[in-house]
Image 1 (cartoon, rainbow, N blue to C red):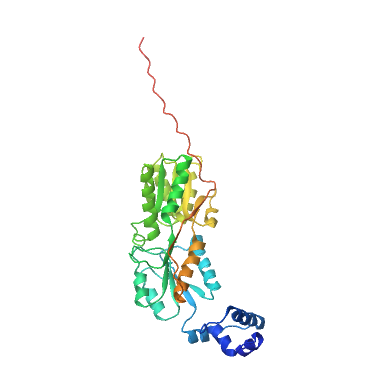
Image 2: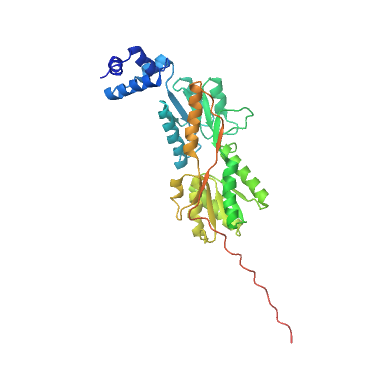
Length: 350
């Protein structure tokens, strides 16, 4: 097994210089670091992560706190995590996924053990109790999402205003004037304070007011069955609807599966547009859903970068709002032509 002495001899440097690179205890020139890294690769040298942590008082492990009990982990969520893990790897950190609750109780225990250098918070609430825990324990953190705090907390997030505007604009441009939004259920105690649901619905209401159109919102849980039920409600209670926007990706699949059974053809009779969806989820629908692509890869990378900059005392990453991008597929088209009403004719007496 290769040792630090072997690496030093291969790279032509001192053992102390190798130690500086391994433990990040002193700056080393890029050329010297490259020689040492190359020597380690050639010799098959493996870093002792425990020794490195003891020397630097850092683990080089960061956590992504995901409230898995409240939020289902679909394709979109996986994109956040995988891109964050890759961003951490490129900076020589390890990223772990912590499925902790939104109440912060588990988070208190985990950060208290000193297992990680910092935390990336996902699925942020408008008033998120986890932030107070991280600040009280002095744990560096970054948010993928936003609170309503007037302070400029380190965050990146979806640009909900631009995202929803693009979806409504697409349907309006096709000629749709009777729209329904199947949104998150803000009456559910788990989600009444959930940033994406609150901001997406508020943006939709503003857009419909700007177009001078009736605003219809149907709350829906984040399940396929709930999406099926919401589609039935839309068709039953608003039969003149020509387009439906759906916020949750699981609910969107339920809406798509239910519409044909309800006697409506997609997109001939009814257009469907999914807000915040991954391409893999859209492809599960038949026909394939038109959707606004969740910027998970971008936000996972940016959120991790924001945290690592704090850990390394670098210039802070400015807040970023990233819009979802429209991908037009087979479920949106112009609305069906309005059928003229039949005129009643009466016979005159002769």
